[in-house]
Length: 478
Image (tube, rainbow, N blue to C red; front, top):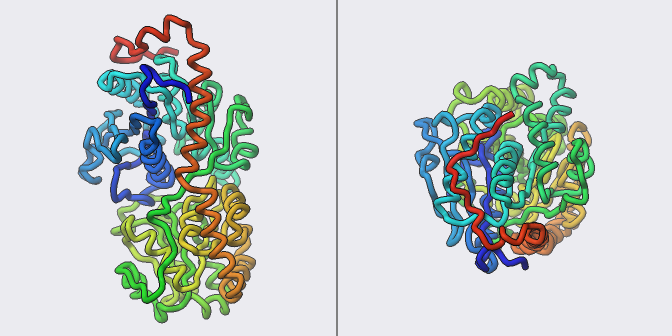
């Protein structure tokens, strides 16, 4: 492994600007900014900090001081593992803002990041930016500090624009709502600057990153995310009735039927409506199983953002139209600690997990289900292809074909021998191919190569003098 500055273990700086992040009880699914990326970055930081070659991991994110969110998000620093910290930096207005309106404040975030690095007293060995906004910040820090930059897009602007156009949204509306041109430009710039791009799947590389002018596949490596096997595991023998079961059972006429479980945030891309239609229009399926939809947390629909409100309103209208009362559960609240229990409940009932998303860059929920012994039915787009290939624990479907989805679900629930085979294969595949320990080994191997190359290319004098700048802010000019 390349020797880090001063012969110490590595100091790794992760940047994830938007959303709400804390070390416990994360509000995943609260909105479109607080989802899989938050979970991935937190688990990556903990897994890296647990490695003997890593001395410190910092996650830089935006500080939020807002009465509408928990005061945890205002704390300047939070320790999440022995050598891992969340560092919250001021960035524009103090209130919680969606990611699309953060662009004017990212240069000040870079200033604050520089101040933090000066307080630590050590230049990071690597900067790893997550999403376009963090990529923008990462370029500025990487250039100033002469530190290699790693980038993970999580989702990409070109792909989002294509999807929205196909849905009939006008170009000018996409631009005004999502600032998509600014995002795509930032993504192209970071692809040009980054020493390494970490993707989750081969399809992401070949069909998404390839849309960019600065696409260079030789600088992209595929390292699938890991799964916390200490949280996600199959149910044990005997009766299993955690408290979340009662929250679900109150919706259902026959709560002991097999569960068709769907778990996502209320986002149009998650395609919940197609799953409801597949269930409602297949009488055999309605007789066989209950449908359990966990779509984030809500208090009142009227106070939700427009996008999630529209998704949940459509869900409730469909339940009423098809008269699914007693067959579908859609609880208003769940805690992060309930998620592993939900997978185990579904597995105990000999049910299945369904991810019908229109697009799925990876699909961490599919891995969680696999590690819990729960077979999966998943969209044929993106990450599920790789998960099914390695785990052999389910089937891919066209997310727009509700009739076929219903037929596949009936087959999965009635073929008991196949269900047992899928359950065992998922357990084995998740442990063999998707552990965080394995992810970190591959990650550090690639980082070692990048850091070593950077050190070899540095002028001899730079290896002796500290690269910690005496400036306390960055001036960026066009």
